[in-house]
Amino acid sequence: MSLNLHDSPWREEIGRLDQIILEMFPETEQRRVEWLNITGLVLPHPIPTYLIPSNAEEISERLQKLQKLLIDMGFLYLARQLTIFGRSFIELRIIPDFLVKKSRETSKERWMKFGLFVATLLSLLWVGWLNGQMYAKITGKMDTLNLVVLSLSYAVGLLLAVGVHEMGHMLLALRHGHPPNYPIFIPLPFGFGTLGAVIMQKEPFKDRNELFDISISGPLLGLIPSVIFTIIGLFLSPSIDKSLLPSPPLGTWEFLQQYQIPLFEGFSRIIKPDLSASETILLHPLALAGYIGLLVTALNLVPVGQLDGGHVARSLVKTEQQHRFITYMAALILIFLGFWFFAIIILYLYMRTGHPGPLDDVTKLTPTRQVIGALVVGLWFLLLPIPTGVLNQLSLLLQ
Image (cartoon, rainbow, N blue to C red; front, top):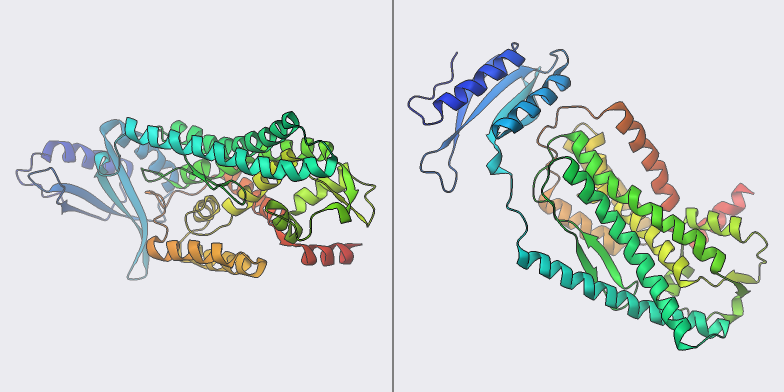
């Protein structure tokens, strides 16, 4: 059955696409054209749609070859699994790329992002100054130069951890053909000094492998400076009597008293093995930056909605229903750990938008990426902030 295009101005172009599809997928059982009204076009645009048995051999490999051919022609495809009368099919839709490709950033957007970056740097310097004052007061070095160095250690350390995280997303997005899109830094003049940064993905992910690569690159790259600053900062941190800490603890220190990150605790015990029961580590601001960098990585890896971890989970599972189940389970873990407000926000956003998945939701994730994904799940549990009492009980059980 031929595609009925009548006298459409796209007749020749769609006919050429149809020939390519039938040559690559001779098993095709049904072909049809759906007409889509697109703003700016006088006539509806044809969307060729095909039904291919999902048990066809090497389907993922052929879809990857098709993707490369279509990109050169200015097209993309949507691929979804369907079940019709008990039979499993792949529904393949060919769409013009201008439907999903967005315009590049304007100079106004870049200046706005630069302004937020500067504001974030200033808020980090301010919070670093406050943390540095407490550190300097306890160590007895309250001179201005020392306070400036401590403030810079915190601000630059945390800004690098967050910045490298976002750079990871940018580099992998560019590698996969997405236009450059700079991060939006979020300043916060109290607490940690920032809520991190975010890159608004303007174009959909083409397939599971691209979704995995772009999503996982940020947390893995951002982890590197966080670990380095944690180790260096712990070496710079003196051991002090617990009575010297302010009571109640202030700012960042209040969170540190309530939550412990297993990986951070492991480094602490290796670097400070002779710590007595009456002593604690007075964290250098650089160690604080490393700790918060680890915390940011852990929260980004939560497999919920459209967080980095949510994207990774969506690339690993087969269906949106499975992803929804993982999202709810991860939210329950967050609530159990005390991050109920964070869990409510991300659940609300997820229930509003869900997760659309990549354009090609059929092509399987490569085995190497599946192994990396499994390792990242283990890494997440090492980074997850655990209430101090719970971690202490676990330590006693393991002894």
